[in-house]
Length: 300
Image (cartoon, rainbow, N blue to C red; front, side):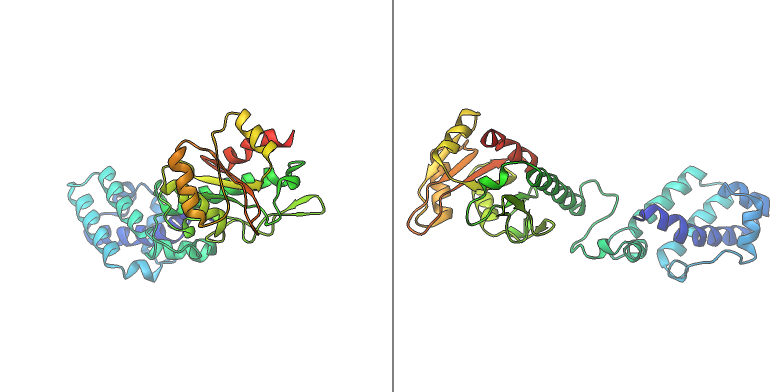
């Protein structure tokens, strides 16, 4: 795991400082004055001056970096810019360089290939970035799956069609916005078997149930399906869940919409089945952990 700050320190700063030291020397500052202005030792300034520090061509040739060096160099040399302002100006440019597809971000992706696999724009420091949101959702699903995998008795709740645990990003619209298990969770010799790490866009059925529920007023972000049994429905109701039942025949999305129209606060959707259709219970919740916790009464 390599932080973008390491890329900045190891790749950008040596080049930037050497460019700035060179600029200040050309403006007539002494070696000691350059050292004081940059907050570094005179020996470091000497190394910059004698080319003993490796410099990255991508930064040397970038117009934004060159302009930054010119502005800061002039400001420090004339006294019109404080060291604090110089720091702020440099930080602003660095953050831009960390944007997806820019210089620092590209170097970071080279050191962290997992970043390159992400399809979308982001800044690594942006607390509201889509990347951070999707990784949080994946982490939430992983935790939920670990709990299910290690929970004695869960395998007995898996329907014949298999289970899936899904969670969506806050503004989910399509199944690509929903993370779940690739394939489904099956009961293999009394053990819940999870075929792979959670991904986005791999669950069609349970993801569609969740998206449809959200479209018709549910505030749920996660869902899990388990086998249907009237006794299980009763246990969920007794544990405080609002349950709504609907028949399994016909269009699933229309049936869920009608069920939620009759009971908007429902957290359990019980599909009673039909000809050739296995009955299933869908448990809804704020996140994967809440959904997994909701089925605990069924395991006692």
